[in-house]
Length: 219
Ligand code: MD6
Ligand code: FE
Image: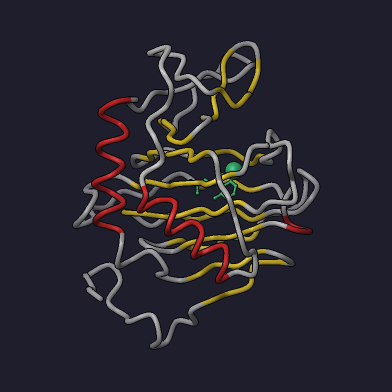
């Protein structure tokens, strides 16, 4: 176990290891902190094959988050809509294989949150720079909504907006730090959520960036 200036507390000190967010949803504090360096090295390998890019929404807006994917399928957006695609539209080739370190962490986190035998086939990788935001949305492009989503935060901390089942529900603000893992499913699976504009900072492992991995079972 290693600690740094951003996360000086061991996971069992003042911070509870697991914080409920809502029914079926939990934050596992620092769950990924030990494996974070190897996850980040794998992000570098994935993005060397399928580079980060700014997708366009069906409405024609360029997203401020830069994205790439690994696994059997990747989430993409363009003028025709949102979908999971087996091919990276930029290269025409399959997305990079999901690294073993990714799969192992996602399955362990889901299990710790009460979702045994999670079998993700997709990992969306989001990159945030200071000022980048992700507006409130639902994750509903997956066919099997019984499976949870596992979300890993790396690098700079962010304010996660955790709303309700209606877009108009006022979101709670939850700080997500390096190594925190959010697992959510069940009655919370279609909760509206987003990321507030990222504050500037400098993280020892990622510099001026926040990286988020979200693991999904898409079918
Ligand atoms: C992020 N996460 O943390 C964006 N979606 O950068 C998401 O949009 C998200 O964290 C579904 C489930 C968990 C998530
Ligand atoms: Fe989402």
